[in-house]
Length: 171
Length: 191
Image 1 (cartoon, rainbow over the protein chains, first blue to last red):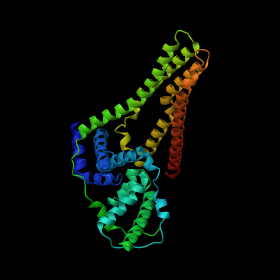
Image 2: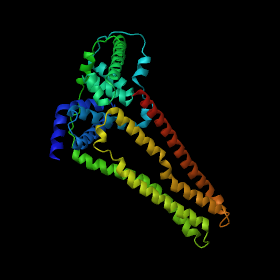
Image 3: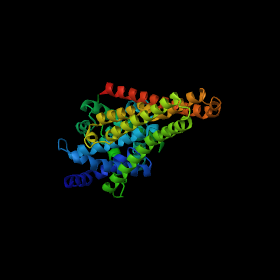
């Protein structure tokens, strides 16, 4: 019990803010997001009983958090029916462009709009990418091959660059 | 595949977003959550079983003097089905609780497992609705027989409504299960 409490405290100290941002990527409503955040903390605390050190605490923490959030999205099935893949978002892109300068609030709003449309697995990748994780680390969390992750990151960059350009031209 | 530039501004906007400040008391949360989950599942399943047993008891009490074999067999079947449901409920209660290890699977494996779990739950809908449907059918058959032939017209609308409601519910669940199966198959193809 003492060990898992220490591990939990360490995980929250090191990755607590990342978990908050992760919850924001899975739920837009502030009240529901608070519940999801609590659920993530609860499942992380429970899971640490089985932490065996075969992966880093960071990988373990993010896996548990993403999996808990993915289960939440599946439970909210009515909304899941409207979710799309990265490939589908990319196929609606018009042309290709470089990012334009827009403010952070607009960028964040645009990011959340895109993320909340995505299916859970694609959300894991885009959120991990935004958290400055490399393809190998994302592959370790998701279970996809690094090549597959790299391809998806390429798509993410294209989609985000295009959306930012659109926001910039409309601003 | 040409390498695209990193989107540092976008990442900075994501990282610098406002965070929640409210502390999380996980121990209190865990006991509350466990109680809520357990209570919700128990009430859903027991509600169905109690309704079926109520039907069976009413049938048995009302038709006992006639010693109608059909009614007796129907009531026995309802009771047996309810017991089987209870047995299954006890087993699935243990399985439904996410184990610590299962939460540390890779994202793909966990997502697939969750989809399967949900699919199996939806496919198992018959066992929750089954006793009630069986009780309705038994009542309808008994009432339409020689015992009280005129009562069937009084009871028919509500019985039909119950059967149709249960039928639609089961069909909807099976359709959702089929959609989940398609998603599971797609996931198998892409990994």
